[in-house]
Length: 88
Image (cartoon, rainbow, N blue to C red):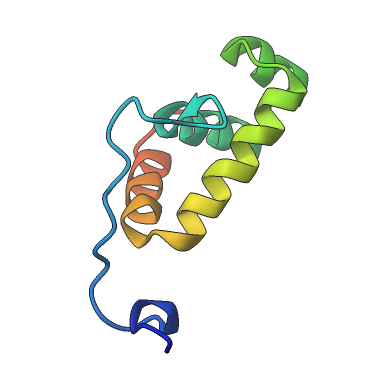
């Protein structure tokens, strides 16, 4: 049986990512800020140095948060809010 949420219907009953929660070792707030930096043309090495992350840690965070964002609409909404309200 397929539940309504898997078809994109019905309310999202998943919990939002609480502030400070980590996926792949990185908070959603840091992930949004670093994603925004990279999207605005920042150098990856500089962004990782600012975030005190290795490339492996960043890749783990990208995988973990991307999956959470894809599966949990509340997390996707929180990421979108954080990403769009970060000052350049």
